[in-house]
Length: 137
Image (cartoon, rainbow, N blue to C red):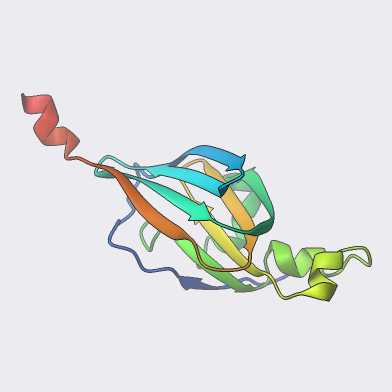
């Protein structure tokens, strides 16, 4: 069964480019933290409450690349046709029967993270830099 993804860009002041990577994924009592890094910024994306997440190589998400690429952004809400839709085909996917999780996709140059969450993420800047200026010093 093939699903055609439909996504919405999650707007942020942090513009993606070919240097954008998923640097770290950490689950703790504070929720799911994803560190996203580029040549111009470094941020923490926090999901307070999640039902699940998965980390995949970008090559395994080819169906998304007509809608999602680093020239458009790095964080998307998947409205239809993503991991959540796939899980809902399983009889024992209890989360899909009890509530309606939102799906988010954070993309990097190599790794990508799919997240099933209750609410959109909170984004915190960790570092703002201009590496080209720092290299000149």
